Length: 131
Image (cartoon, rainbow, N blue to C red; front, side, top):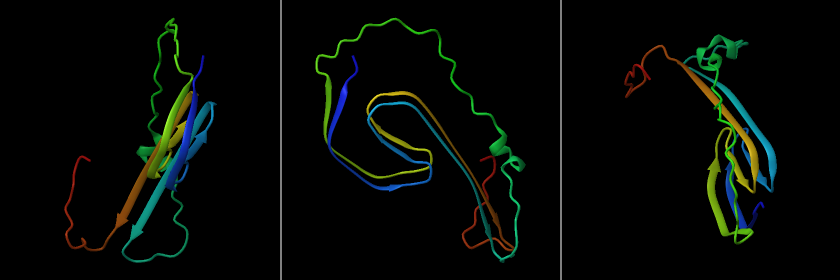
């Protein structure tokens, strides 16, 4: 027996790209978000032709958990409702899911790469390695 979620109110200020708000049951949720951010000290107008496949961060295969065979279980929900008064959140970022209800499968992925090209190092610059 599945449980029913009862929420009096939900307040969310911001949902970013590929963010999902789901109220109710769902079988599957997939969220993907890719980003390349380019910041240059001097403007260079024209096309940049930035491709995801050109960067290792977007080539890496994200492993999917291999679950063992299903476990046999019996569940008894004494109360068929999950009741919540108010949910408040500032926001949900890339590939985030805010879900009220039952879900079968959820797969999320978010990758970002930022490129900054400066002629001289900006004030307060600290070089970080192996990050």
